[in-house]
Image 1 (cartoon, helix red, strand yellow):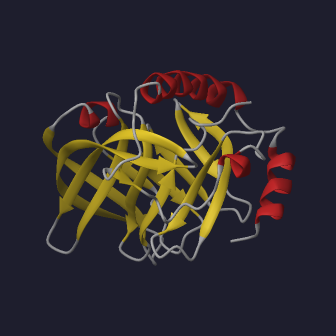
Image 2 (image 1 turned 30 degrees about the vertical axis):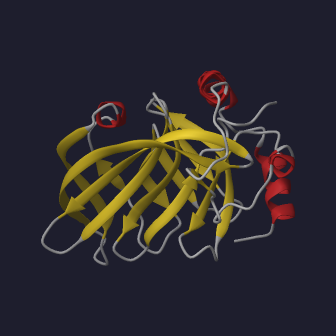
Length: 229
């Protein structure tokens, strides 16, 4: 993945073709929720979890004049800033300077392009229904393209559980979040996704999600909810 200057140049070039109205509207809604949550008194005490995987600052975030998200490998070796490419029925797609694109439905990863084993689509329950539950059982189907140019579906049985609220820090903002832990299993694979929900909402601020058997997990930070233009 390329360095920050290249990413900034790419963002400038892409500004003519992004779906700004949809992202701006959603960002403004999330920013309103965010302010209400952070207006509560949250002290930086022993319950605060520092995000060592995320060293960036408010000053760094202010460089971007378009909504962005940030993704990172779990080993912290690869990191990319993505800008909004468009939307399909309110499902947002984000793209990096090196052509990787990720699509999300309310914070749940539903498709990737540019990886060695892309997630072509995901059959899933509505995220708001899942994240509103303290405990839920459901099914998911991941679809991939195999070497014979055919679809390969992997079916999972999943359970989701919401944990007690705690404080985390992202880009020097202290956020009260509720972790939603999703465990999915079948005969071959088991994975555990983690979603940090802005407390009292279904807004995903940070997540650790499984892409595929080959690519495993990566982290996503929802930064456009924290941006001010």
